[in-house]
Image (cartoon, rainbow, N blue to C red; front, side, top):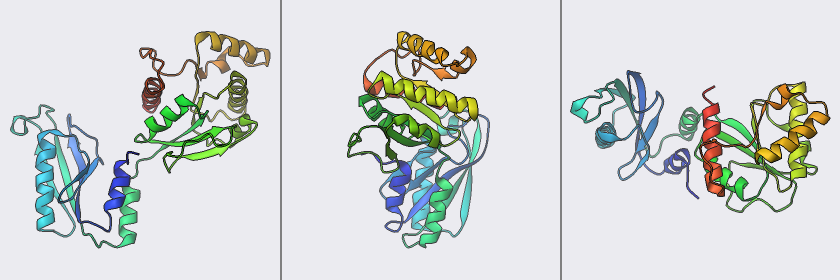
Length: 274
């Protein structure tokens, strides 16, 4: 299982000295945003500040910092022009922090909390092939996943440790416990369960309006059937407009689980910009 950059850094803490390089203030076009980071040890690099010659120079300077550690934070200013072989045209400050192998545990825990990106909650209904592919696709992305299925022993053994799994029957009962502001993905093993979960989500939206995204796997034909059933239960076209079906980016038409997962992950990332 591929580790995230933060998990790789956690393994280094207390075992090796490293220099933390992070992006500070910047102007114009730059490769990464303020707060982007990489950790440089004597023989490894975790994370990235954007690649290219800028990163190469930053790694070299970070290793100089390891050989002659300086207390506190040092700062270097870079202009991203011809001298660096990069045409971004902007300028930025890079911050360099030296962390000893024997740094206090309390300090390293604060560091991990500082570097942890805010994560948007996602509740995924369905432990099938596409659900498994989505769980893998979301691992390195800024999402916190809760995975729900009505069947016992459905979740894979190699699931990411950060994923919360729930066996709930009837599965739609889990909708009441979804964290406000969540994205919801519906792709259970049966159309009947999908419909039950969808109706529960629409009911919650009517009462609370606190789900950020409701995505339903399926075809236009499936959505026509589901929307008609929802209308029979009193839901309006305006309420149904809150549902995205089919899920994924329209331009990506492949049906392989990994392709669907990549398309859905890209769609959710797009929603973060709204």
